[in-house]
Image (cartoon, rainbow, N blue to C red):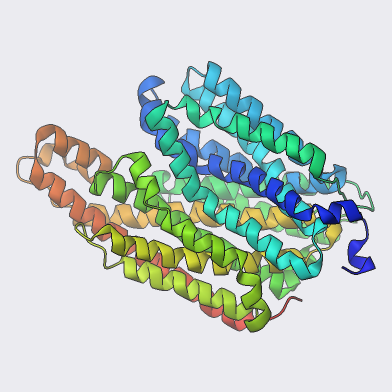
Length: 503
């Protein structure tokens, strides 16, 4: 490690860098888990809190909306005032809110508010984890360290489904919140003693107006994406809020180009490593979240598994993703970023195309192999792309750079669920054949696959169940085809425009 690279990093910090990475990984997993764990508790929350479909949707979306909408600002706050305090404050917010929700929440509104506060805390935590990793590791080890960080970020979602399924099946919805508390206490204690503080050495003032513009832009864009499947992609609400998001984004870009101390220097987007890294990450998460959304429905409603049993069937995905991400730096050193990431996206495309051959009676072993291929592709995509993004950013802006990376994941994942779900629903509605005598239920049957399955079971109508399953499988195949096309298109862009070596 050169003297220049060691500037600001003491020998003691350098020696415990791998322990610091472990603490950052633990803190990161807490954030990712909370993105998905609540999903499997929704049926129980619906019964115990008398929550309707809108309430349930906002219990899930409040976290993602506030988290994604405030990421850039929270990353900038960490850069300005210290990444360690930002990390610890965020963890404390998530822990206190989780415990209070488990103990006292008695209405849907309580849970929705709690999820919003947890999202705000998570927005402090996630950028801090990656920026601390970048600061404490020298350049020759950074690819490996960021690869491990990316492995944990990618594996966190399927692990979260397992944790959520276990919690609900054994204890109830409260455990989805309680489980955060001991893990966060451990992360706080380890972080207090092990993690060094770092910040912008020039102590530049916070870009308040740019912060407000970024919050408005990200909140508007994410809200429009999340609501589009319900309100309609061409509805006045979706188009109006989406247009507001675009306007605020353009205003943000203009402001950042002219202000003396920009929160996010727009010149960074002139670096192809930064821009193409963000594109690859965003579209990889588009595919991953779209796929996970459809597969939880597939395993539970088509194949009849419990939430926990369904989540366990995702295990081959992280088994492929984690080693691929953690070791991708060796492949990058030999073949270059563009070739490794393009290969990863091509594997993702191949996995999605394989999934289009899945039928109701397909054995799980074949599905598991597809999950594993997808995991390999995701790992080879996310880790080098994240390293490229972070290597393009000055150390003083590590928090904002990390937040930009994280925001691209959130937007990509939200788009994946919204578009993938819309494609699935449209094909399902077009393909569903209503059995004779069920015409009175046609509206609810075509609008909701879960409702069709429930009504079919209650009335003992096996024709309806059979037809609904077939229509859903057609929709799932259509959604997979869209994801395959997205992955292939991104692979071509990456091969042509992503730098082979770090800029």
